[in-house]
Image (cartoon, rainbow, N blue to C red; front, side, top):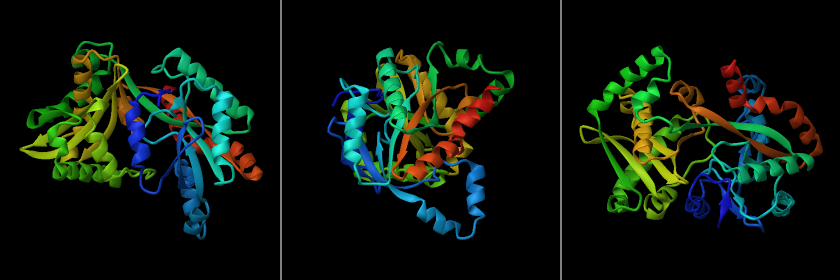
Length: 353
């Protein structure tokens, strides 16, 4: 399938559909739009103030259960943006998604529609803008999504990159990077022989699970079958960064090269070693080194941890989720309460002041 608004190889989306996260039911619209059903806690992305208020209510656990609905999402959790089938216009795309939805769930969400992304060509930006407007006219509530971090590779070395940061940040980051001398790095291409070793693949998945267990938001848990499929697929042009301390694997970072950009997708860390060695900071700089060496245009660093990524010098671009509850009363209330679900936008606006 040929998609626009896609920063990743199409094969990654196909693996998602073949091996969906736990509890997901994949679906494809008549126009070829990928999506999925899941049981969705409506407060998953609520701000901290809202979550604190709910936790203090009597029977808050029962309330959270009542607010967990069967929901149809269009988009995937392995793509930064909602992939859109090439050649389809916005009204046709929305009509096909509404037709697939029908009466099968209480809520429809078209997730991560890009908002004037600098990572996409102008034609894709125009199509995404048309879909956002079509959704608005159809009565969807538009909610700002997470902050997608990226770094234009417009520098020739890590030193040039760090020179753009404040002296205090440069000093702190350089101090953290000293641990790099104690580590060994291997970079393997997806599809190589080592990634066909079941024991090694399981080790990588175990490290992914360690990171998942530490996450604040548990939206999608990728399966071992999905990891095995993408690690063994050479066509994805994936690159697995493996970090060792005295022959002990303490972390990995899986990235893909697509459209001349390095797309950072998955990490796995062994705790507490990963923190002791400042592996987050080290892997960031190694990814920039790799992008420079390959003469890539951008390093796309994903959605999570915007505060740390801003500290490391990232820029950000946003998406919108188009949300449509079946119940008219909920639609009205959502329009009034949507700002409680825009945590990253609130952080970004405050950060820009």
